[in-house]
Length: 382
Image (tube, rainbow, N blue to C red):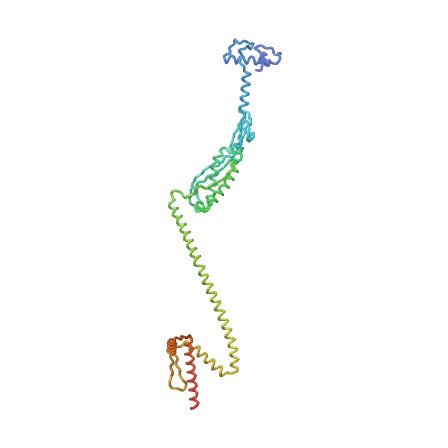
C-alpha cells in the first residue's frame, strides 16, 4: 500500500517514522549520513560515532575514487601489429580494432584477440575410395592463416573443426574423381591444387574467415592390408613401361633401316624404269634408222641382221652344232674348248686379254661364212 493512499498513515518513506506529508524533498546529505552510519555498524564502526559524522567515519568516497581509477585502468589493452581485436559490447558485435592502445569498459565489453599473420598447419589422414573402386591411404597438410577476424570469432562456433571437416570433404571429393594410379603417382600435383580450390570454396561458404595458403599431398599409398598386391601391380606396370620402351627403341632402330631399304628399292625401280624407257626409245630410234637402211639394201641388211642375231644367241653358248645344207656331216664346234685354248695360249704368252672370247667368236663366224659359201658354190656347180 502506498504511503499517500488512504490507510497508509501518511508515512513518508524518505523521512522518519512519523514525518509530515507536506514536508519538502528528502535531504541527500541526510540520506548519505544514514547510509554511512549503517555501513559503520556493519564494519565495526559502532554506534558511538554519533550522528555528527566525527573523525572515526570510514572514507568511502576515497574508496569509490580508487575503484573508479582501477576500473578505468583495467579497460586499457594493447593490440600488436600482427593482431586484430574483436570487441563485443554486452554480447553483441561492436567493432574490430587494429594495432595500438585501446580502451573498453570492463565487464561491459569483451575483447577477443586473434593473430592475423601466423601461418598454422593442419594435418589430415584417412582411407578413401578412388574412381576405380580402390582404397588409398592419403596424408594431407594444409597451411592457413586468418584473414577475417570478425568471421573467425563470430560466424563459426569452432573454426578448427570446420576446417578439418571441410578438408576431409574436399579431399574425398577430389580423390573420388581420380584413379588409384593417378592419386599415387600421376596426378599428385592436381590433387593438391584441386583440393585447395575446393577447400577454399567451402571455407568461404561457411564464413570461417580462414585463407588457405598451401595444400600439400604428403603421402599417398595403398592400405597396409593390400600393400603386397599393390607392389605386384606396380612392378607389373613398371615392366609394362620398360617393355614398351624397349619395343620403341627397337622400332626406332629397325624402322629407319626399313625406310632406307624401301627408299633404295624405289630408287632402283626408278632407275630401272628410266633405263628400260630410254632403252626402248633407243631401240625405236635404231629400228627407224635400220628400216631406212633396209629399204635401201634389203639383202645386205637381212644378212646383217641374221648375223647379229646369231651373234647374240650364240654369245652365251659353249657348244654349237652346225648342219650344213646339202651335206651329210654335222660339224661340232666346242666353243668352250676353243676359248680355253685361246686363253691358255694367251696365258703362256703372258698377254691375257679380255677379248679372247670375241676373237674366238670372230674365227667361228668366219669359218661359218666360209662353210656357207662353199656349200652354195657346190650347189651351183651341181
